[in-house]
Length: 57
Length: 140
Image (cartoon, rainbow over all chains, first blue to last red):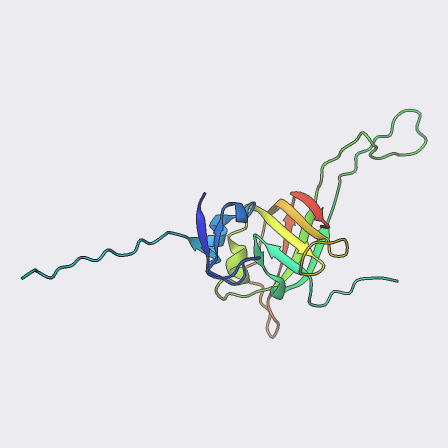
């Protein structure tokens, strides 16, 4: 099941920033919603790993 | 006499997108095709019957103000031409009830769209007709 992030204030029942799934949009054209800027594909960003580069003395 | 006056409340959703504030009219046509069942012995034409289930042939027509802004009318509608989607129309926003039935046309088809309908000195509008699909009425 794919997740999408709501990117416009027009998606019925949701607000920008909400996460919606395929089932939330059942019957709607997801491709059209993405193209029209109402949702975008949602990817979970991993937090950047930090690396200690200081050399030990 | 109770009747309905449509002011600002009707809700119109196309492909899950709320277009209420761009919409000026909406017409939901619920049609079950007429099948003739007249037979020998009848003295008048007959149509349908308890054992006859005809096909739905529904449509929804809506008129919208055109807008080329981000995530507005043109962006929402253009990608729907030639595919099926859902359209939801209700007399008022809010939950479904006996006095606010929500009509959903599932799997309806948008055959055409007029991206530019421009006249000097007038607001641009578009008229869309969604055809086919199954109409359901929710009252709760």
